[in-house]
Image (cartoon, rainbow, N blue to C red):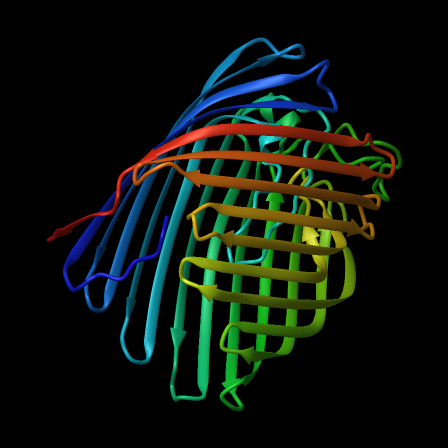
Length: 405
């Protein structure tokens, strides 16, 4: 949805519906597979001088089939609610998200991201299939500016992701997490700011079939029949943000992280200490009718693998580029790579993906779109996973409907 600024006590309603189909091929697919889908979306936003509330609902229906699967109809319902309040020194924010329904695991390939956050990278299950998935997320944040130079921030959140049923958790285990962060930033000049941040994450996974390749523990050497990974991660960073120009900003920070993890309840935790680093660059320039937006991120840190719930130390890089042409055609491209360096439980592995999209407006209320994506994952001791997909579709949408409260 496009950002907007409204007068006090105003509201906006936006509606859209996208119909399309894709063809997929890859590991575990004999021949090819297809998805025919319809995604409706509704978002309402209400604003006042100091507060903003938005809510969205996105039900979708899809018919999947192919040589490897019987035709499967499914509905994925996603909801999100966000609220913020601010004055001259204080900003409060709250975001709630959730989704539930059937999902094709091949559809988890990352799409072009946005400038507001780094692009995530996660592996795909080796067995590409259709499963029932549940996701829940909550986050709350506070930002306080005691002076023109200082900004202090605290955020807390929780998340749940994975298979909704026991049979689904043999492909995507149900993993829950709690996280928190505290930060302090000091503006040294109009273009340079120094900052420090401390982060913490607690993760635990529902007990089920062990998806970690060649998993072993000190008490039970060999491949485990079941796993229930849980972990604690904490990190501290110091760094600097620099504004190169009116249209470009970069940041770099370094620090150390500590991780404690285990595969089964009752096993001793394995402790690791890791150097961490984060480098990012954002550029947004051009005329309003012909704009280019870029974001690149490089990270080195321990992460929790969403496929297994285990901790691994990894280097990752991602990039997103968007072009708005004078014809109002939008082009977007994403690329990412992750090289895990192994961990106490997992073997080293590699992930590479790329995807591109194009959207061509055919009037005020109608647009055609197409997307192509490629994904490759290879892990020592495990199978190589690949996925190739091509999507074409059409979107019907309303212009923002503004109303007074």
